[in-house]
Amino acid sequence: MASKTASKDIITLRGSTAIVSEFFGYAANSILYNRGVYPEQSFGRVKKYGLPLLLSQDEGVKTFIANLNTQLSEWLESGKLQRIVLVIMSKATNEVLERWNFSIETDGEVVEKGVSREKSDKEIMREIQAIMRQIASSITYLPCLDEPCIFDVLAYTDMDVAVPFTWTESDPKLIANPQMVKLHSFDTKIHKVDTLVSYKNDEWDEQ
Image 1 (cartoon, rainbow, N blue to C red):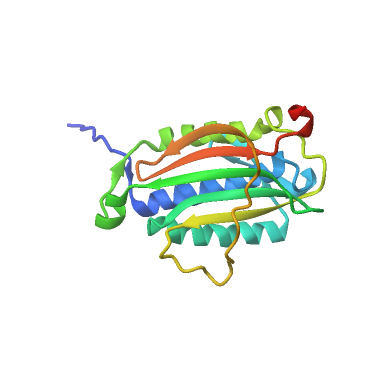
Image 2: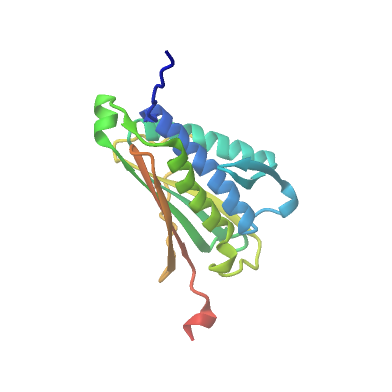
């Protein structure tokens, strides 16, 4: 007699960590492409989250994001990461033009006791999809960056975390009187990620 078994989508701390760190890598690439920080021809097309996305082929960027994801994974798995901010600055003056803020809430019980949670992979993917679509359409709600730009990444961790030797202490690189746009969030049931972009007020808008 045939029988049917139902399986549930179990999310572990390590699995959630992999989802969040991978998301940040793709989100960072998408921001760098859509905000024109690197030339369009330096990106290659891939499919992820059911969407066509672009990944930088620049060796420096690839290495930077790979190393970043390794460190983020360590902090995420220990429950020590509070926020990641991708900052876009003027190459000429270092003035901060945009801050892409990813706030992270971690389920402390999962970190302390090693329990798992349940959530459909498809549901998580749909939530991430919504964020990626908003990043891709950012040209419609953010001012044009009409000068050469560079980027940096800030990590906000618990106070007891030692600064890795490849990182340095930094000021928060804030924007005075910024405009803000709240984007969608996603939740693995272990890590909840809220996304917000703040940007410099155009002087023309203030007149």
